[in-house]
Image (cartoon, rainbow, N blue to C red):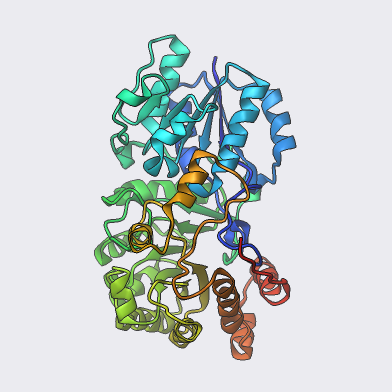
Length: 478
């Protein structure tokens, strides 16, 4: 029997675009590693004799010392590591640790990083194979062949180190989402997962689709073709999760409301089935309607996350966002009317913001739009997105900085921001200012306190607010 460990690495060396005050991943919440859950569940279904475990280091607060003990005790034959580019140092550190503990362990790396840097990743000494794209089928096939002693070859998304220079690396074939088993929540300790803005303690994230057909210049989502699960398949999983004791669901799709009718049909089925739970989703304002939001509210929708990004139509056009400020105003107004909470995502440090005054003006425009929550990010021009390529072409971004990091990953790497008009310290100060201006309004504080319904919700909001107010900020350049 083979033993397989699927690992989310510790985030001890995660790339930081800005040194100083910034939100950490856990400040937004702690969510299950859905990709690894689907792979592990598929393995259990296809190969019940294989012992597969998920080790989610960030959520379970597992540092390298604790991880070493876990790997020593389990002694896996294969380790699969989920890789984001900003976590590359920790990905390789986990691989080295695994090799040190067991020399013949097979290390396979997958995740979003592989869409941009497959050949470089396969070239690392610590890595034996990679998976590009959706790994449920190809990784299972690899383990099946390894377990049976059959020859293992490269292709269709799975690649071994041998003959590296002669192989054209391509993503795996897209999977039929309705044929995937519902992930087994018993593979994780659900007590470690929460949403900072969730009302209930028992929150689960689900995916009803994969891929996004839009072309926002700042986005590096690799799967551009939308594929949705059937309503029947989704309802079946919701019933399972409710039976498992979950009371709130956050649909984590890149674009949940690809059409208003999809959400309308989904909401009608929830009502027809008599399912009682709260839910939220990430969506686009250009494909929302009042009718859609009204029936979603009737079906239990509590919160909608919308990407606003910037405060002008010209800015949205330059970002290829495909929405208008007028559409944002309509959707936020409809949600207020229906009693649906809204979260507005906003970006600081965009290429067309030529001064501090322009950034502050955009922050004020978001405040004037008045979503219930504001979530700010500074622009991270990462390889794989259009805005990064534009920065390289214009000379604002030096590609050598990223290339040096990829060739020799080190934990002190601070990637380039768009600093044509604003310095890194200025972007950091404006990022912090955005949170202060939005959340420290007296009227906003009183409104929020009176809207809180559970102790869990109050605790999370209080801790997040305390960080905004009291955390010392000290932005530096490299």
